Image (cartoon, rainbow, N blue to C red; front, top):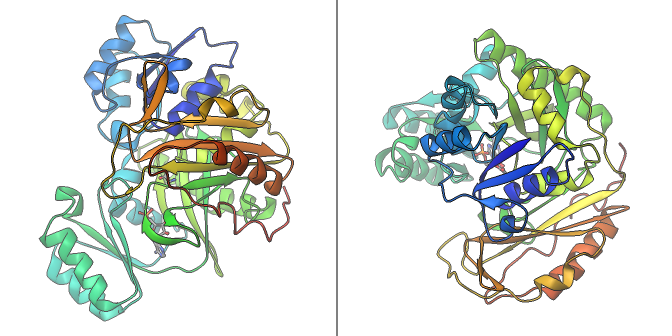
Length: 427
Ligand code: AMP
Ligand code: GLY
């Protein structure tokens, strides 16, 4: 099979790495890819959001399956366009992608179909939003309806912060149309987990539960980022809780989407808050998580290619995912200044020292190859990934390797996995 992967981050490097091991894959392309992906796939100079260009390419190059990383590509309708042209693609349609691209749509669906989530209301009018915020009081959460690259949610601990969030989103329009409508919801308390399934719309194959670390600094301090690290499996989601999430959240969501005429194919990712009242949905994503996937795929012993293929063909009921024992940790190395402004073009040293070491992988995110060297080319630069017989072992391996890599301004968290270190793994 000739496969095209769309995207340019660590998630896409992990996908390309895993697919490159499949005996079924004869040729891999990635658009636009990054420095590291270029070692495993032919890079195509097309933006991830150029859906017309991607369809043209897939048609001309006889691509058998296209796998999409980023949500924006899906929200633009890449799946609808490919399917109209008779091209095979893994992911949900534009209308089904609204589970992620419209928080109001997702919340209304959950309410209608009794899927556990925070109490909420949706507003198009800033005055009404402010009145509701005052009525509920702080702490409270204000969310832009549309896609904001993970930055559209403000968890406000004071009333003035919440009112300020309404102003920023609805009056100042800092995220343009994405913030014209807002969801205001109760703040949930608990531990978070990322629960991803691959689905053909009817059957769902769960991946290992993972936990992301969204804040920049150790101890979950500092601003929100795209994710500074992840690990899998997350022991906080034991087998009983995973079964509960499947029964109360994942399967009801798939049935709800089908009932709305929006059968969902691809990856359904439920961002969960594990509250005292059971797991509740914070948000849905309609694609693989980044950096969660980097910590999940190294433990997948099954070939990924037939799983994606079966999802597209609607025959997942006969597929299965087999997992290695042990744990996997991903630590993100970011540019100094990220998630604000940061410099690029910094030479990366020490990348070769980890190469070929057992249980260790480096997935590139924002890098570019410049002759024989790699330079930083984005906010999140590298994902250092280690597996081990347990979380402690994986952490030792990963942080050893991190210590050998350096570039000017390199920043990373030293406490990935801290929540799980106190818990026994049961799966
Ligand atoms: P979202 O944009 O919905 O994914 O939210 C981003 C982050 O904001 C989540 O990962 C949580 O840390 C936090 N968050 C979102 N909704 C809530 C909520 N209702 N209560 C507490 N924290 C929340
Ligand atoms: N790790 C969070 C996300 O992929 O949205």
